[in-house]
Image (cartoon, rainbow, N blue to C red; front, top):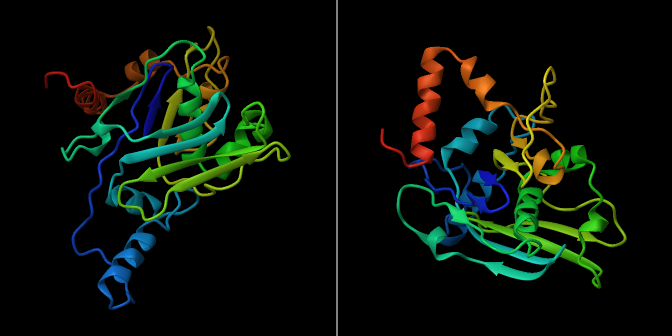
Amino acid sequence: QALHGERSADLGEELVVEPGHQPAHLDPRPGLAWQQAQVAQDSYSLAGDQNASEDYFRRTRRIERIEVRNFKVIRELDLTPASLASTTATAPWLMLLGENGCGKSSLLQAVALTLMGAAERDALGLDASTYVSNGTRSGWVRVHLAGSPEPLELRFSRNRSAFTGGEEPKMILLAYGATRLLPRAGEQAPPPTSSWARVRNLFDPFSPIGNSTDWLLSLDDATFEEIARALKGLLDLEP
């Protein structure tokens, strides 16, 4: 799951359910059994779980709906883009266009905070009370994922410095904001706080991002070719 920049975001992933993978001890009633299967598949966490990668990659996910209430400049937003309802095999890209200050970065931050998990939010050192819209006392964000019975929910209020909800990281998450600075000569970008979420630049414009040129030049030929193929697929370039 990747959130990109001030003006665009990839908020989409595809749902693939692996045939035959059903947890044991399901209720014999078909409707309830299906719900139990979905809950079982959603019970993993990327943090400190050796089997998390297997559960994560068993199915990729697409964000189908985003609800936001009283988050910074966004008083009320219910976003269900038609492009995210596509049944095609590839995940869509979503571009956000608007004037400065209308809430593009705020929406990306809201989604990132909901998906990254509590440990990563704590590492960022954010004060949740400063994210509540002026003139309101509390707010929430809900991110609906394809195939999940319940949305991931984040809550925040004026009288609490910590966010609540969305405790476990469910996705690999990459994000950056409008200002993308490279490390100064002789310096390196700060190490990521986790292996599943790299989002600091989205919240701190002075936090440098990694130097992709140096990283690409450090790769062996086989890895470089693999990365090149992945980038061509993401950018829909000729193979």
